[in-house]
Length: 374
Image (cartoon, rainbow, N blue to C red; front, side):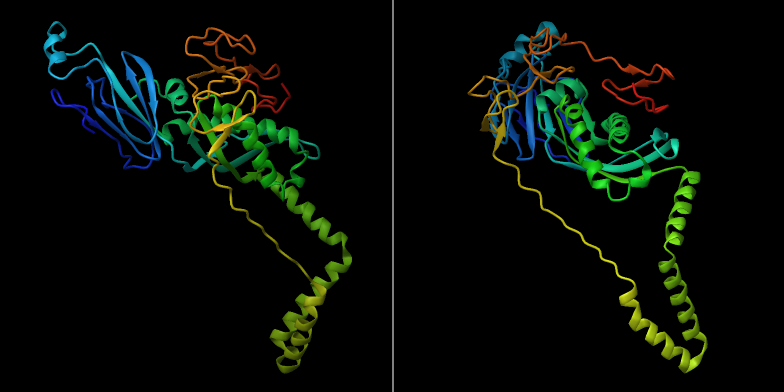
């Protein structure tokens, strides 16, 4: 890593051996005295941010970069005697891992309330997996990392899971009438929930690249009601019931009556395809590769992915701060949002349910505790 040299120039680089680290600060303990002319090497799957005198100075993409600070080799060390031979020009480098972190699990720690049109108020458990990726390293470091020396995907997953569960409760209340209509809707619910969460993740410079719902399970007594309803649906079709009973009787006869039974079973086997038919189909699509150009959030002009500002409207693409109310990119010294007027440092307040006084995330539409609409 090379950030502890007292006289020589530093050669700074970082490798994530664990595969779980999202951000790493060098030096890992405290701050350093990175000198003028130090070499910074950034890999293709990384981005680096230089902090100098306590401020974020510049972001670096893949390649080798020469750092420019006020720490001159040997000279600065001699001049720092009044500060205990420690230069007051403190410097740190933050590395952000831009790879996609996969197979992060989410689920309901406690069952969420859902008003079913047919069964009334029930409580559901849901589980799934999601993938995240850092797309705005500066914003992510400023809003979520702060001055920590490292941050792993596991350390932020608890908060992200709480956000997913809250938005899942809202999405389920809007898109599903009864859990009897749940089969066959997992893909649609997953895609809608992912789109709903995009703004929540973008406030921290994160992208929710994929989200999957693997299970939505009601309580055991509700599952028994569903099983009973399924049995009634089969019995209502007497023709299917008779065919099912006949097939079972013929199979039993073939097992117990020697050659005659075997002949009867063979004849029944030839008739079965005409009596019962079923088909399964599936499709899959490969995701398109990431484009080399991005869309400006303000004027929707196509601009190069490496741009820091939109050449048409001047919108700041490299985000350092973002309005928590409307998502507008803010300048580093902005006190109010130019779009909605929200104070830049004020966070949205949690929504309190008027029925049960439970606290829900800002913008929640349904209460996680009682299922009432907020």
